Amino acid sequence: MDLNPKQFLQSATIALQDIQLQTALDRATGTVTRNRDMAMGELPHAEALRQQARGARLRALADLPELLELLEKNLTAKGVHVLWAKDDAEANQHVIDICKAKNLKRGVKSKSMVTEETGLQQAFAENGIEMIETDLGEFIVQISGDHPSHIIMPVMHRTKEAVRDIFMEKLGMPYTDEPGDMTAYARKTLRRKYLEADFGMSGGNFLIAETGTIVIVTNEGNGRLSTGMPPVHIAMVGIEKVIPTWEDFITLVQLLARNGTGQRLTVYVNIFNGPTQGEGDGPKEMYLILVDNGRSNIYATEYAEALACIRCGACLNVCPVYQNVGGHSYGSVYPGPIGSVLTPLFKGKENASPLPFSAVFVARAR
Ligand code: SF4
Image 1: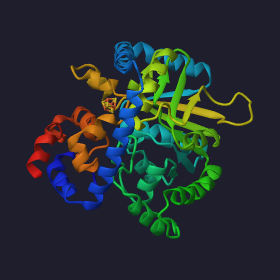
Image 2 (image 1 turned 180 degrees about the horizontal axis):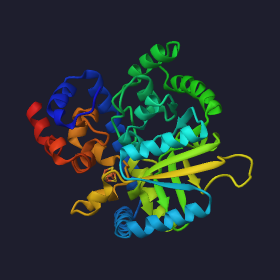
Image 3 (image 1 turned 90 degrees about the vertical axis):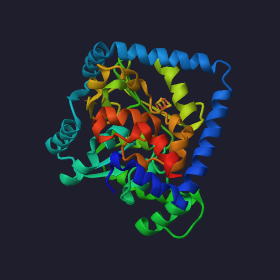
């Protein structure tokens, strides 16, 4: 399936008739929105925290060039190789060059939207490198030849019955209707891959300039295994993810978890401060690829605030358009309301013209 934002109307019309999709969206968006409301509702100062977070992101964007320089300096001092990529092709080429130079053939990857954006899996396939997605949702997407349909819940478009059928067909799993059994089966398959991997990859939820630190938040532990077990860790992150201080991180991480999944905090917060310094475990080499890919162009326009997004996914869950047609209809890596802003900015208005008008199209198609 190719992603094409210009086909939004056709894709949305089909999605509205798809019973399996409608069931999956109804279950998932309802649950995650209720959980989010509860998690935010228990904060006596929720609005103040939101304003504090907005201020933190806007301050970071205002100082973006200086913060990136500071981040590079601090990471380099810790032995991290920092590489810059002006576009998706250069970002992917950096990874492929590292793999070729180090003879890395098999990798494991934690969830990363920017690697979806650059089409990294395609680059691996073209260069004969095996890369296993280890986030459960991304793993399901990969083995079924699919695309993620949500920023943080890649298989929101699948019911558990559909996932069961995929595991039975692709992994040989015996019949079960228990999500716990399905997860255990996938975990058994993935464990071996961590042990065999030459390198691990991750994205980055935050880049903290003052100490030169990369942070990822996950709920499955796969991020820690993907980055901690193989001898080489490559992180690919958009340049807008840099923030100045740990104080800002504390503000932002609270809202990311509460808005994203309705948790007070994700199960894992992984903090990377460079390669191992002789501790015995952890990667011996570490790379950070900082991806621009159109962000500098947005930065210079009236739409710069779109770069403040921390990819929590909450605007997708509450959006009537997303709730009705799901993520694939947008034909873009970033779906939902924020995708309708980012995709025309990244790809050009002429290549994503229906997205800002998606609500009108869906109202017409219903
Ligand atoms: S724009 Fe959407 S995904 Fe981004 S931070 Fe806001 S609610 Fe979250």
